[in-house]
Length: 145
Image (cartoon, rainbow, N blue to C red):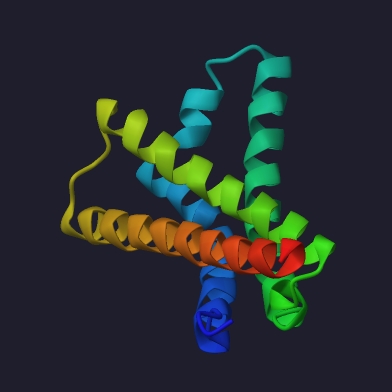
């Protein structure tokens, strides 16, 4: 196939995903004042919310690390490559859809740094979705063809 995803783009996606995991606590604490809002919940709901936050952070980092360590395997058109790139594509596509559908309804601080960060993070999310959709289609075509 001539339309294979370039390694450099996959590696950019890997580092980008790990970056999102690293900055996630900052965004929760500083931008969204998340923990003050969480304190208003019942203790069990507080722990559930924190657990899901950790899942998101862990998945972002894990997807990045898997991508970095197994770049070639993620485009070798095997069944596992189809499954994993499809999973990651669905994850980031869901994130982008959620971002578009729900997040504009909420108020966040509008400082210059936050505006720049919002554009940067949304650009990363769309890039991740695009790269993994491309990888998924490439793998799927090679796997079934």
